Length: 252
Image (tube, rainbow, N blue to C red; front, side):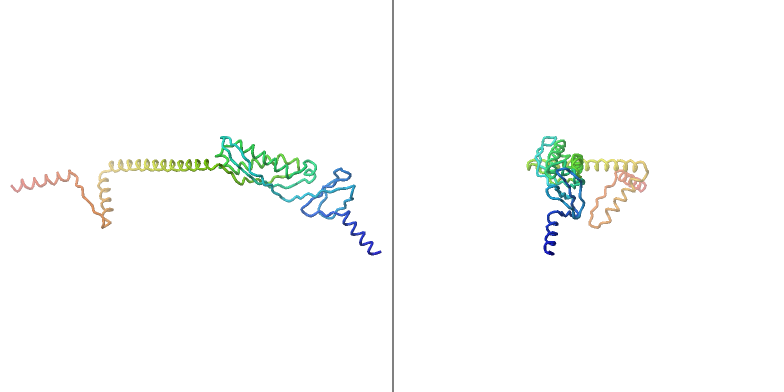
């Protein structure tokens, strides 16, 4: 008798009892009609009359395969992405869409192609985060009616043709050279302006030019390896010549 009771209990557990784990929700149907959501634990399910679908509510990922897209400036690129989503309403995920994983994958592909096609290549390369956020928001708005929340989308790779890579590299190098020339020209202009201003100030102050000359001579003479050549102004030579003539006339 005891064996019959144990056998009957085991049979009852195997046939009528279903376990729902903590990360799952059970979508219950009775005679084909939706009758509610079952929380984690052991739940009674009457065969034939009832049926329960278990739905995993953990965050899952969809790997969006490479998509060939023509950008706004007519450049072919290949781009892929990964979508992170979770089910917030298990009932809608079963009732509103046949296969939510496949539906999200297809929707992500079409949305990504449409969004990328509206941008130029420079915008795609420089604004990846903003573009990914825009695609994510569009996906989230579509999947709300399926009880699915898209929490994140990441653009993994943007692949461009090899010949275009070389062109972009040359363009970047030319741009760097352009900036270097502009910066050097600006530096030369500022240096010339400062020199002109310094010369004007020195010419306005009596004796300033002589002091500047003495300072330059002092700087040169501080290093013993330097050889200096003295350039005497013609005014000094004339003064010495006049002084010598005066002395000779006095002697005569």
